[in-house]
Amino acid sequence: MTCEYCDIISGKKKTANIYADDVCTAFLSEQPATIGHIIVIPNNHLPIIEALDNNTTYHIFRVVNKLSIAVFESIKCEGTNLIVHNGVDAGQDQPHLSINIVPRNPDDGLSFDWEPKHLTQQEMTTIEMKIKQEMGPYETGRPKWNTTEKDHIGAEEKKDAGPATAVESAGTGKSVGQDDDKHKTEKQETKTPEESYLLKQLRRMP
Amino acid sequence: MTAPLSSPANAEERDCIFCQIVEEKASAKKVYEDEKCLAILDINPANPGHVLVISKNHYDIMQLATDDDVGHMFNVAKQISKAQIRSLNADGSNIQVASGVAAGQKSKHFTIHVVPRKRGDGLRSYDLPKNQIGPEDQEKLRQAIISKVDEYLHKGSD
Image 1 (cartoon, rainbow over the protein chains, first blue to last red):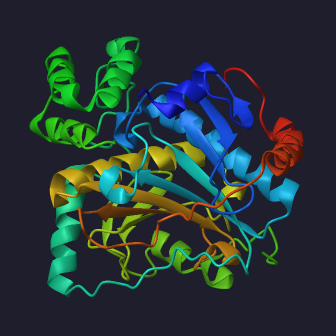
Image 2: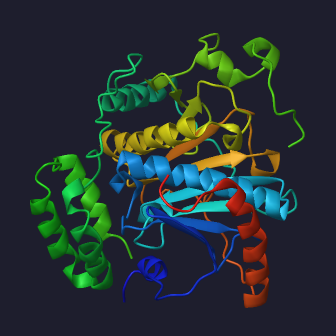
């Protein structure tokens, strides 16, 4: 079993394609949440959003935005949702990152509302400090995190080898661990304990 | 979405809580800021650590934002997700934007939600139902949408 989304990009699997360029491909969902549900995927086999480099992220979401306008105007819905399920525990059901554009209407029976969790002021402050520290200095316009192309899980130079290795990983569940270890040793440049943790998430992909 | 596309320049006139937060006329727990956007904790979180990435420029909805702001803000959202995984031991995240009241948009200001997820947290809000559609209907839909896509997107590199 290979990656269904990679098969769509290569043309092996036929879908109702909407748009494609060098970076991403968009098609109508075969199991739509609502009429006009579009899925946008990176052409490279990248499992989670953290694996996208900044240029790819910038490009894909601009395309997603334009597609949301196109679907809004063509099917005359009253709103749209953009939803990403980033990780198995967030509801991701394919090992290849996807962005959903879901057209909405008042009577469509959908709701993405939530019951707010109640946190104490102290809990909120602790969380604020933790995320703020991780994000780095602010109000200077110069974030701590690297804004160059190499800021992603896996080095840029492995881009060509990336999809094949990842597809193998996705296809043969048993060897995922081994492939990830090989992946890890190859990516010395960006390897950190936290990124290894993120790579662990890959093993949990279906 | 019946509101006018243009908005008054002044935050008070606009009555936009997020503009007031950007201008520091209302308080919020900020976790990140740069020239284009601000990231704050949602005071009614779906999960602990739920962050809102809001544009400093006022746009009623994402579709009215500049390409530059959209692209940049999703890079920030990506970094927020990474920060949540690292600092809160999250297992993943949902990233969500609502455009329009029918989509559940609560405040009329372009906002990206980044919600940390943990295994077994029971949050079903972002589950998508799976419906069926016949091949002929699918093709009709595709033709209708493609005719609009060409207006907004050029094929090839951007």
